Image (cartoon, rainbow, N blue to C red; front, side):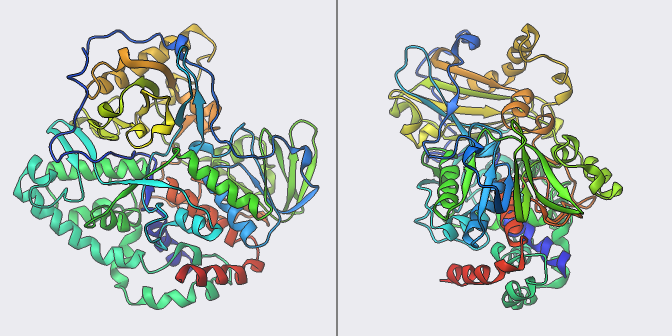
Amino acid sequence: MRYFVAYVAVALIGQNSSEAFAPVAPSSPSSPSSLSSLHSPHSSSPAISSRRGERRRSSSLRVSNGPNDADDEYDVIIVGSGIGGLCAAAMSTLYGYKTAVFESHYAPGGCAHGFKARAKGVDGDFCFDTGPSFFSGLNPDIPAKASNPLRTVLEAIGERVECEKYETFGLKFPEGDFVHTTDFGKKGGVLEEASGYAARYQWSSLMKRMEPLEAAVAALPTAALRFDVGGALTVGPFLPNFAATNPLENLKLTKPFINIVDSAGVTDTFTRNWLDLLCFCLSGLPASGTITAEMGLMMGEFYAPGAVMDCPKGGANAIIDALVRGVEKKGGQIFLKSHVNEIAIEDGKATGIILGKDGKKIRASKAVISNLSVWDLFNSGIVDNKEFPELFVHDRKDTPVGKSFMHLHVGFEATREELEQLQAHYMYIEDWGRGVEAEDNAALLSIPSAHDDSLAPPGHAVLHIYTPATEDYSRWENVDRKSEEYQKLKEERSQYLWNVLEKIIPDIRERARIVQVGTPLTHQRFLNRHRGSYGPAIIAGEGSFPFPGTPVKNLLLCGDSCFPGIGVPAVAGSGILAANSVSLDSIQPQLKLLEKLKQ
């Protein structure tokens, strides 16, 4: 039963937001606009090295700058402040645990933190997101769904993230330029325009095939799940909902999504290519490797009549700020620039942490929750691997590593009128035949300034374009970041992104006022990502993400290296599950929360 409920939870956690998309401005139902008529596209590349600006934390929240004020003991200590760690901290404080988060970086948020930079001659800050850029279900003015874990946490801690809602984004494919809407697979939609009536008919069959799976994954709220005996109390009231679904259909939730695509009779090439890209944007794997549960509610909600997406005002960093507020107002503490050297383990039990500079030990009476990647946990020396079964450590170290990214963050000149001609997000594919996983074949572009004027000085805007987990780390691993070789490689490897960007804003090089190029080494340095990786590349049907518990008592895990997996909703869900797993003490406050969420 434990595993059955857990697999159902994947879908509850994996469908409301993604690291691969971006918010989009409403536009006409014709092809996406560009600024091609406004300026000449033939401009030279900006001098990147002279436009880097100053990188600074974008949040204005007050958090502790170091561990000097930390107490000697907490109930729960969390190592790392990614979304998973912050959600675990928010829920832990809500449950009444004395909680502290220790973060090595100068800013909380992990892959979702934001940063500011300034350009010479421009008065004001350019505010950039480092990672997640597409969200759904966060808007506080739209009723929350229990299946959205990040919204569940925000509702639980009483925090709002103000959002602008939108409905469309741009597609630049070999078949042509399109605007994606919820009518994608309907009469007159993108699918019919690109591939004809037969494709629309097959799409209808697929959506019908997804209905029982959507019902199954909608049966349990994320916040009810826990993996101890308390689950009988928290999950029990929702089991009748699940029992009403088809058990044979439910078993398909753990299988690759391509099985559902095939069984629905989808043979149209464009449709299969689109589903591969959609899966890749969500999980870092095509449909053959993406678990069906992750697509379960996503497909229904993404294409439901009237469905909208959310652009957080202030960028993804507004989500981090809200989580930090939720942690602190309940008495939790967050310590930045506070590197943890060791998670202390005594007699098979996690007992606290040892900090970097002075070796100070801070005890944890209930649990230590690690928000580190699986590779950093077992390869960095932060834990003594001898405290774990040898096979357990070997299996965790052997987790397949997903590829990395190339990024361009650009602050550029643009008027409000010009921005209104653009979609705020574009998905680009050069050649379907090479596959969505091929290097320099796909790119994702976010222009959040299309919705949010606060992200750049007047008359300017920001954008972020990147390759979606297709950059091989091996070409970078022996390169010195301070070397001329590194600068040349950055210039060379960023040209593909410039070329794609020019297809949408032809004179972007001329307009650019500040440019920052991100590489796998940037991911490794600033985001503390093993080999700059997107995350574990665990293929559905061949492996599964581990649960929050470990063989070491009181040591729990959260983040994208454990169940339910990669992406904002998944890591938020992992934080909930970790907090729910700390102790049986949380059962009563958890039940109280579930009652509140029903209202």
